[in-house]
Length: 328
Ligand SMILES: Nc1ncnc2c1ncn2[C@@H]1O[C@H](COP(=O)(O)OP(=O)(O)OP(=O)(O)O)[C@@H](O)[C@H]1O
Ligand SMILES: [Mg+2]
Image 1 (cartoon, helix red, strand yellow):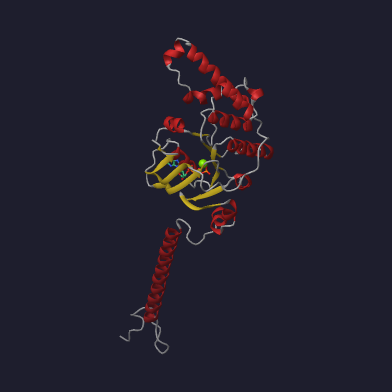
Image 2 (image 1 turned 180 degrees about the horizontal axis):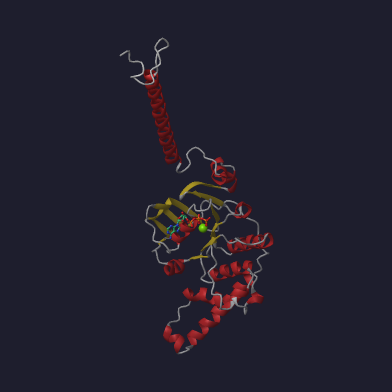
C-alpha cells in the first residue's frame, strides 16, 4: 500500500481498547543521575501516542527501558499480557519493534538486505535447515523476500531495493529503518525522532506513513520534537520533564497546559519537577548572601567605632606622637 492512501487521525482511542503496552513505575538511574523517574504509560490498540519533552528529559532512556536495551532500576513493562524480560531480542519476538534516534542501518548492505535482517526474528528455520538448503528453508526465504518487498513498497522504497543503504538520502534512510522495524511484524512500533533532519515535505510524508502503519493495526509510540507532527497525529500525548511524566492527555489538553509551555520555554512554574530543590538552593544562597552582608556591616561598624575611639575630641590637642605633647 502506498503511504499516501491513508485516513486522517481517528481521534482518541476507544477507551475499551485493550492495552498493548503497560509500563508501570519505570525508573532508570545512572549512578547519581535519575534519568527516568517512576513513569507509567499505557498505549492502547490502534493508538498513536506521542512522547515529548525538552532535550535530556529521558525520552530515549525510557524507550531503552521498554525495549530491553537497559534493565530498568525499577518498574515493569508489559506487552499485552506478557511481562517483558529486559532482553532486546525477546522484546522484539514478543511484538515490539523500534527505530533509533541515531539511524542504525547496515550501510554496506542493500536496502532489501537491511529489511531481511529485520525479518530474522520471524523465520523459524534453523542453522541446519539453512546449511542443507532444505525445502523448508527455501520456502521461508521466499516468504521473507516477498514480505520485505511488500514493506519496501509500503514505505515508498521499492525502486531502491538494490541500492546500498549508505547511498540513500537521509529521509529515505529513516524510512528504511521503519521498514526494517516493520519486518518483525510488530504489534507496537516505537519511533525515536522519525523526522529528525527531514525537510518539510519528507516530514509530511512521514506523517502519512505513521497513519498508514496505524491503519494496519499497529499501535505507535513516537518521540518527536516537531510539535506540528505530534499534534497532527497523536491520539494521546505524554510529556516528560527531568525524567518525570509531567502531563498527559489529548493533544488539546497538553497544548494548552501552562506547565508544558513553561517547560519548553524554560520558565519556572508551580509544581515543576526540581523546583523545590531549586528553591532550597536559592534560599540557601540568599541566606548566605545576607550573612555575608551582615558580617561586612558589623566589621564596618567596628572599624568606625575604633576610628572614633582613636580620633581626638574637638577640644583635645592633636597628638600624632605621645612624646610630642608631653609637658616634661
Ligand atoms: N547510558 C547513559 N549513562 C549515563 N547517563 C545517561 C545515559 N543515557 C542517557 N543518560 C542521561 O540521561 C538523561 C536523559 O537522556 P535521554 O537521552 O534519555 O534524553 P532525551 O529526552 O532522549 O533527550 P533528546 O531529546 O536530546 O534526545 C541525560 O541527562 C543523559 O545525559
Ligand atoms: Mg533522545
